[in-house]
Length: 347
Image (tube, rainbow, N blue to C red; front, side, top):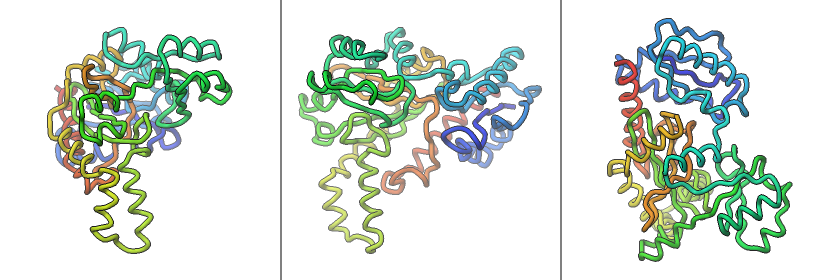
């Protein structure tokens, strides 16, 4: 039996996290799915008497955002160690997991990732600018997506920065604009016009390509992607009936959607790029389940932007532009990665 520990209904950013993964396993791999027991924090003691492994599906930074869940899950981790059970995504590692932790661990392992400096004062900000160079990307150490993101592009902005307006627990890193490198080699205009983010999902030892998104802003995510822009455009026109093919084609041509879709399809049709790198990064971080956001920079190789141990993984029908992007096949690949890992845990 495998115990999966996730947030109860009153905590966690994502309710009933990855329910669709478990449903698929129970329907398509019943010999595995029926060996999974879900324990939600806050639901009472967890029974480990017949368990071979514990897989934690919990948010980060666990101790800071969800202290009660952290206390309970740490107790389960301690008990699992007492029984010499296999443990994946330990709460003790998730406790204060953030951008500085991520950078320090990857840098120590010799893995290319942007340097991060903690900012506690205006003096720290000046030192970061001198050491890392402008432009600086300022984010909260424990924040997500675009929340609190700020870019300091020049000395004037640096001098006028109000420290009180920065996000909580601010950290700074150099803003590497990969578009410049793409222009230097004459790549397609989609790569040179937009920022991009590649994502792979690592589950145990399985590494699967998941998405390639383009955006007009440097910290690329679903809600600021060009896919989201197309989706919103379609929703705005929905009350007026289905837009004609010529209108759809014109807007998608302006945005470059077809080129983006072709780039993503090519990315997803191939095996994961440098899977051994992501396995090394996983080992360096002490976690076994992660979404890696990265870019392949011309002349520099793979740069890992971030590693997220609590990624949003919607069912195929709930992904952004799922029909246009043919996400059903891609989601099933993630299911198979989970199946392989669960099979290994039960071996």
